[in-house]
Image (cartoon, rainbow, N blue to C red):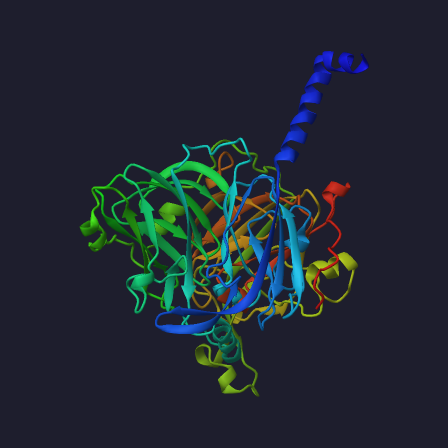
Length: 574
């Protein structure tokens, strides 16, 4: 009788319904178990076979599919000869920073012969993310898609497509990528550019010894396909297009966006874009193509083009059609910043969002390259950068140095002194004409492991200002552990007196990787609601190798649900 009385009360009935819904959601969530074996595997590309580091012998690695709310448990066994970690790019990792993966930031690397199990839950994210090695340049071949479907019983905010196809754009070196970065680190010069770009691991028809394995995507006339496009390349922004077809962009970085139409995408390394493509052209074969958006004037880049084939599967497309040469698309010029900007500035959230308006922490961070002068006793073979220098990179004139004896998160959690400091500057040490002619006295940064401390719940604004030190270019800046709103971007030096009028505080896009325009700036905002140590870095791997990174230390809040979980027992030791 007492239970009947409770349910008869309307307010109690409401709460009872809420509890039932919570239980229902928890019951529908699943735990997915995977084993990742990191190993050397013979992979033949461009006529040569290389002993390539892969996951489970696959290149690219396995595609993981989950629903929003599901948990992933991935046991990583390292049978390769290099240290390795796996980063789940774009996953919020709420209170589970130990599973984030960047080497010496949230964990020590998994040594050869050892293993580590990553455990984390997907919370409130839907769309396309990806996973990749976060140790040296292993992510050249150690990567794969992470697809997050809506919760069971829920739908996409657009008509369900007939097909879904992951498109992983990558870079291929006709040599061991670890040797490439080691040579660059030893000489101080820029590393060799890649020899090919790839579609789902295959270079495509325009490269030697490659046409027989070109990736083919099939569609029936009239059908719609959801392409989940990922730029898994190491060092290059890419344009992507399909001959005679348009895209409807519906998502980016596992967040839905207000749909818009375009014929070309531009993705920086780390970024994902979900697009709908309709088979509304005459039944035939059409090239999908990707090539560089190279924004750095005068810098060498891989100027090749990778292709896949969109093939209509219909009765009208007979065997003659299948044998016909695919239609080739027109691609933007390599330095077409106008097209790149027109694309990146179209993104909007589908509806009004809660952007922080009161700001507790206002940071102004310069990003860019620099040159380190060599000491008088240095060997010339170690100083092969411009004019006998070594390339470097920095944020606010600090070139980030990874620790080697502890991870930053471990040092923070255990209170180990001397591993890092919390004095990363909130503004550049010296104000200058960031995108103009910069005095040579500002070209050489200081080295350090300096973090910026944030209170739990702090509302943060970061102005990311590009610089023209040595050369200006578009920088894809990725923040671990957070999504952020990109509220504005522009060219030249950010001016708080005039550029704040451009801020979109209504429906800015939610991203995890921002393309800071060449010789320009971008403004991001987020709430520091996830405790831990979180790396923010340029996703051009050559730049993080040179130190274009910093990290936020976000303190615990008051309650257990606002605090970092305890480290797992199998956390690797250094």
